[in-house]
Amino acid sequence: MAFPYSGSILQGHSVLVTGATGGIGRAIVSNLAQSGATVFAGGRNKVALDSLVEEVAGKVVPVDYDVTDENAVKEVFRTIQARQSDPDVGNFVGLVNNAGEMKEAGLVASNMELLRLQMSVNFYAAYQHMQLASRLMVRHRKGAIVNVVSQIGEQGGAGLSAYSASKAALTGATKSLAKELAPFGIRVNAVAPGFISTPMTAHYTQLQRDDVYSRVALKQSGTPQQVADAVLFLLDQCAGYTTGHVLPVDGLFQA
Amino acid sequence: MAVKSTMSNQQKLVQAFCDALGVSSQTVNDELQYNTIREWDSTGHMVLVSELETVFNVMLDTDDIIDMSSVAKAKTILAKYGVSL
Image (tube, rainbow over all chains, first blue to last red; front, top):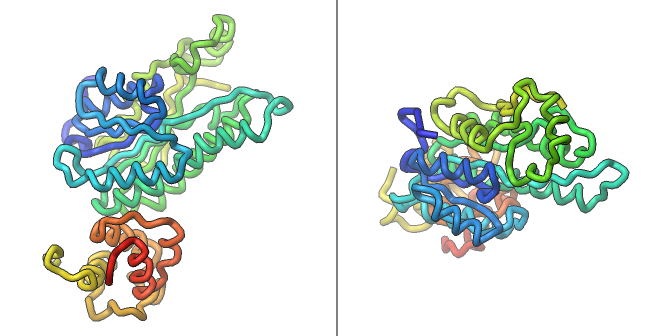
């Protein structure tokens, strides 16, 4: 989208986006780069990251790491810390926790490994990122964090208990950290997508899609761009009086 | 704020405490402890950590942040990160 806001805090500053090479991640990176931010784009697939850098107009710095590797995460933030003084990068003012894992499994067929995986990626990793990001933002008394949660986390979904629990945990942290970090000028919000057309949902049959659409007031899926636009809104100063909220991007979905 | 580039690490440390907590340099001595003055509460601690990381260009581990309960302790911890005081 063309960036419509004046006085963006993103212009000339830097932002980290995790899960940057997925469907929603790519749209978020593109939006933020167009807004004038330097985007540290995190992902595990180097080839996909390189392709993202080539595709997106603007300043995108690929960061090849696993969000669940605590030492790798620290190293990423050390790199951002060191590069902030580069005027081409600018102060670190934004974090988008977008990396996610969704494994569908009913309770009887689920196992602890699947639960741990989803908690690790969807919650623990996001939490560590917020912890380290906020320390960089405190220095400038300015920053915004946007967590990509899920309507499944908000409303629940059969066969998705582990996923919904992990996303609900992130929603809880979003609301608490909004209060904790407000004194430092750091806002924390979340975007809760519903059914979005991405590679993650590409395997849905028409029958499955129709079933989902029957529970969506707008009777269609959302697009990664619509989620990315919501993320951009919440990161930007135009949402400067908004913190601790979960913005649905779901066509009014009822699980 | 003093010009940090010409300061010794000891002076930078004291200045970091002053800037982060909004206290005078006379207040900052080895015996000063977390939660013994109004300014060094949990909010001040977060600002302090951020200030120390900026001034000394380090990134502290969470255990060290929790353990940083006094000025003296801050010196010991920073030494682990190669900051000589």
